[in-house]
Amino acid sequence: MIVTTTPTVEGRTIGEYKGIVFGEVISGVNMFRDIGAGLRNIFGGRSSGYEDELQNARSEALAEMQRRASALGADAVVGVDVDYEVLGSDNGMLMVSVSGTAVTLR
Image (cartoon, rainbow, N blue to C red; front, side):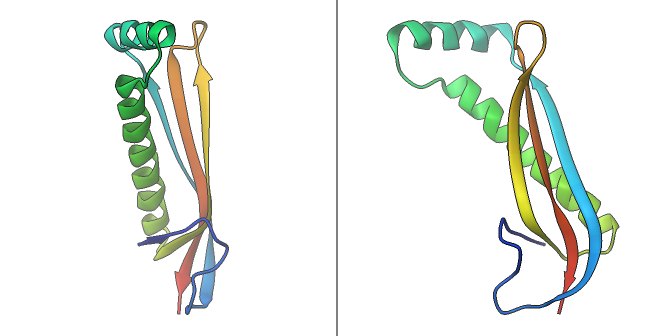
C-alpha cells in the first residue's frame, strides 16, 4: 500500500475516494524510561527509551491506518498527517494519531 503525505501519487490518478482513515496509539512510558529521561534532562543527551517508544507508537499507528484503508478496499492513503500529544495527569502517556484519505489508484 502506498502511504504519502502528498495529496496525489506521482504518475497515478485517483480512481475513487474511499474515506478518511485513522490510526491511533496511546502508549504508556514505564518508570525506568522516565528515570532515564530525567537523567538525560539533567545531564543532557538523547533519550533513547523515549525515542524507541515514539518510533514504535508511530509504526503501530501507521499500520493500523493502513489496515483500515485496506478494509475499505483502498490501495493507497494520501494526505497523511501525523500528530503527537502527551496525555495523563502526569503527562506519562504518549498518543500518536495518523490520518489520511483512503483511495484507489489507476
